[in-house]
Amino acid sequence: MIRGVTVVAAVASFAVVAGLLTITPGLDTALVLRSAVARGRRYAAATALGISTGALVWGAGAAAGVSALITASHLAYLVLRIAGAIYLAQLGIRMIWSSFRRRGAVVAPATPVPDSARLAWLKGLTTNLLNPKIGAFYVAVLPQFLPPHVSHLAMGVLLAVVHDAEGLLWFAALIAAASAFRRVLDRPAVHRWTDRITGTVLVGFAAKLATSPR
Image: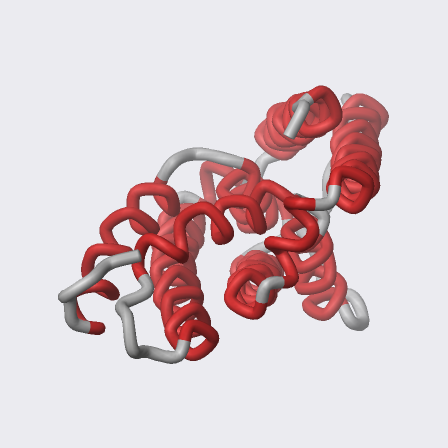
């Protein structure tokens, strides 16, 4: 816990740490990029919002002590970790499998389907909520940026919002870049390889999550 430091200074320090974490390539970046390439700006934006919602839930939960309880309980952490690994694995395998089934076929441009944005949001949300390492990050980091004589719950939520804002800015930049090169990226071969790469990343994260001791 930071002592003798103002709320503004604590938020600024946390923003640097969270910002570095945000731009580090990982599962969230892979999902948003894949959504932007395969389904377009609207679908990718909904996926990003789902991921951000999940991060905000974890941050608020950590501030309230929920994530601390999950981290402290071996059984709760194990159940959530295995559930997350299974979800990511089946998502990745399905992407890889569908990419090979489409080989040689003409891929029509993505067309909006009913509730596609809602489903994208749910996918981003579920992916984030089933990753206990997000909660572990908040439990480990948040206490270091809580000034004394300030409501820990309010401060924790504020820091989670800061992290969310940085994530949304990063995702917006990724989506804009993907949209700028959409003509190049919107080709059957690119779609197939995007799914294969993203699927492999998801399976790799699933394996890492399943075999991680804590």
